Amino acid sequence: MLRVVIVLALALGCGSKPELLAADLAAERFTVRGKVTAIDGTRLDISHEYMPKIRTIDGTIEDMIPMTMGFAATTSAPAAGIAIGDAVKIEFTIHYGTSAPLRLISIEKLPAGTKLELSK
Image (tube, rainbow, N blue to C red; front, top):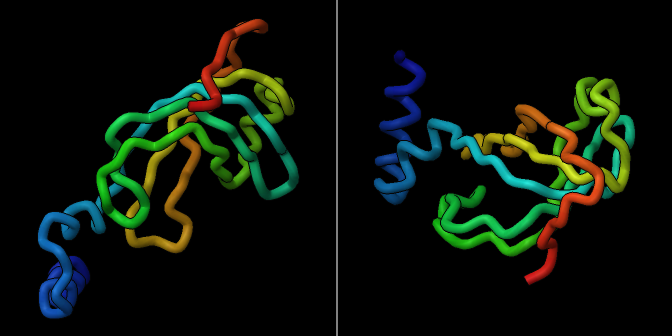
């Protein structure tokens, strides 16, 4: 509790935007469909569809065009039979104000032939 109060006091004293203060201390969860473009020992890259009105890593609210995002690879992706080129539905969180803000929560392989809109 003391740590949160200290962080809050420091942020207020440094002229942080009040509307971002709560977001800096919390995470938001998102679900999106996409295509796996790379898997290696430490990274899973997913090209995702358009995402309307999300709070980005820097705290602004904006539409996110289709793009590729990198996540720390988890043992669940290869174990679930996920491979490069697969259409997937992912759930992830953005942890604002951290050194590793993107965290993959779940990944689900979609049926073969699933149509994705990966360009805008």
